[in-house]
Length: 216
Image (cartoon, rainbow, N blue to C red):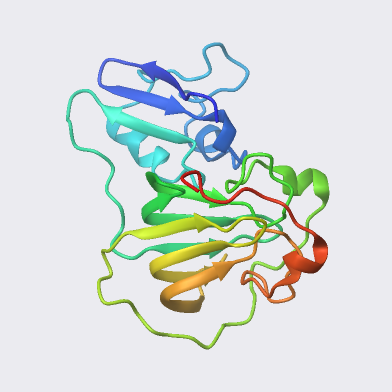
């Protein structure tokens, strides 16, 4: 993964990690005077109040955009409940107190089409691949909240298999309906499961290959 590029203004510094961007266009649609892909540099961190820029960045589903307040050292905080939203024909969008393959973060989009070149993250390959999967799957029937709703959610890639979500997690449809709640889930990332977003072992028959955790 390449190093994020930073754009420092008077009161806020914006960082952008192209490798994690899924082109949701939240930034341009909400603050086009700050984020304009046709301009160089494409980020102008002084074109809006820092509070407004920070609020917009917190809606970036992939976490490709992050910020650091220069006028106020407070960092972005995670919500009280870790959530994974299943996006129609796209990735699983996570928001919470996350540690993804050993890296702490607040927001991330995880591949579920099996085609990403930046596993476990989505890199927009689902569009080129024509991936199709509902954002409104049936509930799992499991509703068992974790002991601590503010605990960290570990996302651990399984070699040639799914990603394990270990810790309190609520999985919702793209429109917010609860599908599953518990402290452990295995999420499909090969694109072949018949029980999406959950793994059903289809990666074995499909011969899916993807790296395991960085630390082995």
